[in-house]
Length: 98
Image (cartoon, rainbow, N blue to C red; front, side):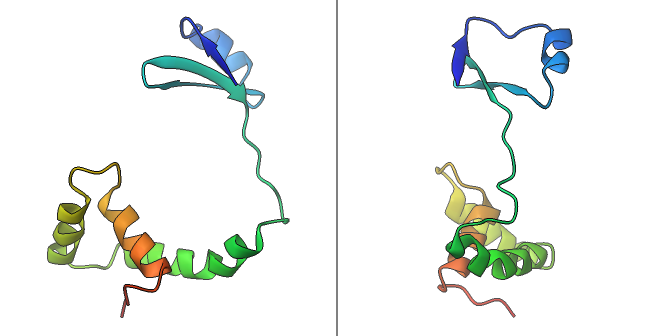
């Protein structure tokens, strides 16, 4: 990873697509090696929660507006979204979805 003084032109960014990843973070321009999937070798914890994670992400589209508003209120003044709150509660076992 490296910090740059300015974002390169779109042509340069496009030329390195798939090799380097350019992005902005906290008013800094960052370039890093393009992220790659780890393939089939995953952390055992990730593999154990993959099904539950897929399920809870599908359930987020079916919750009521009132429940969504409650999660959004919980997420106020934090860096999390309402969906982050819902997913983390479900994966930790503190929230049950029907």
